[in-house]
Each structure stands twice: as C-alpha cells, then as structure tokens.
Length: 114
Length: 114
Image (cartoon, rainbow over the protein chains, first blue to last red):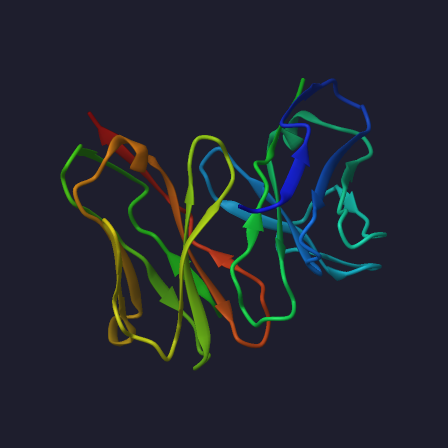
C-alpha cells in the first residue's frame, strides 16, 4: 500500500483566498508530481520535483506554486483562488533509484472555489 | 513527440461480460515503458502493470490480461468476466527511458452494470 497522503480531501473556499494543498510521502521518494484533473478525466502535469530544492513547471501552465524543502513534503499553494481553479489535484511520487518505476498517487484534493 | 491515445472515452458493459480497453501510443524512442493505472471512485490512481519496450510477452493476472504489440503500437487491456468493482477510470501511460515524466492518455471510464 502506498504511503502518500493528501490533505484536505475536499475544500470549498471563497474567491481570493490563499490556500495550500498538502502532500506528504513516507517512502523516501525523490521525485514528486502534482497533476490537475479536469472533469473530463484528463490528467495535466502542473509541477514536478526531482529532489529537495528542485521544482519545475509542468506541461500545463498553472498559477499555483510549489516548494520542496523536505524530501517527504511537496505542498502546492494558490495565492488567490479563483473559480477557474476548481478541480481535482493529485499528488504522486516515484523512487529515483530505479528507472521508470510506477508512480504512487495520493487520493487527491477536490477543490471548489466559489 | 510522445502521445498516448485512448479512443474509448466511456464504455458500459453488463457484469460478466469481457471488455477490452484500447491504448495506442506514439514515441520515437526505442526504449520506453508502458503502464496501466486504475482510478476508482475514491480518487487515487492504482498501478496495474508496467511493460518495457523489449518485452512483448503478453501478461495475465487473474481476470486481467494485457496485449502488447509493437507492430501496431498498442497496449490493450482486457478484463474477463467483468465485475461491478471493476467500474473505474483506466489510464494508459508512457514514459521514455531518459526521463520519468509520465505521459497519460485521456482515460476510459468503464461502467460495469449489474
């Protein structure tokens, strides 16, 4: 069973608020990812990290930011939430010791901005 | 360019029927890895199988089987004697050997009707 956790699971928040979605893993994985999943199911990579102090933007432009100060923690922050940010956000991790292993996913945070 | 195509957006079958989910991929790399993930209603993606480009052997795991054919760039997934618990969104994915960035298909939503 994967040890990757996302909090909160569900969040309803007003426009303009600052929010942080938490993602933690206890597997010691160097690689971590944030995906945004639209209602049509498609997964879009918005941020990734290959280790501490490493962060990169993904394929889909996002107004969110991330940080990686500790190996196990990869939070995503929205400085000013908007209704267009309403989506499901999935965090994932991968070990870097082996090549092209599977990714482990958290249960996601379903964000609604009203 | 890399691409994964899951042409079936949504499939509905009656319980106990067999169902095949199609996956067609594009890559210019000679070494690559293919994956299938399942996303149940709880939200997290669950890894099902990984195949590398040098291993065209088909695999069977219980009611699940995978057919990898490099000649047609396909990696299809068959569920035999489907059950209601198989209802989920299924994603096919591709990574290259030189980096671990995962390219997901758009997913197929599978409904197993009782």
